[in-house]
Image 1 (tube, rainbow, N blue to C red):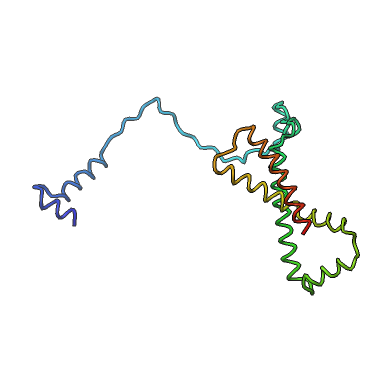
Image 2 (tube, rainbow, N blue to C red):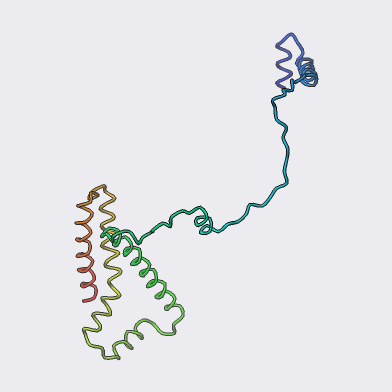
Length: 180
């Protein structure tokens, strides 16, 4: 349709112009330069696989010291511990969910069994504290991260002071939960 409209608006036939263009392309002569190199194709060869450590030894590259050269810092230790506490909490939830599906009795039965062991109050408190510690730590450090999300407390001095305050808060939360 576009060719028809253009042909009606112009004096020349569009189809005639297109056929002239086609013959010009077919008869064009391109100059061959003597400086153009010939392209030769080689058979594909699989690259040699050399283990990373062997290559580094062959090139005499030094071994990277990784974590062994760094002095442990409060920030890095708190970060690693936060992740570990999160994994422990995930393990708690998974064990509780699988236990609820697989075990034949409800929770009250197992609580009665533990009470029947006649454990001392100190032992029960320590056991509850061990279960509550990852929650208290992860919760307190999560509050610290939410404080950081407000773009406050991000200087090195403030990071360390909030780190120590978070540890105190985690201990307080853990003791509170263990005392329940």
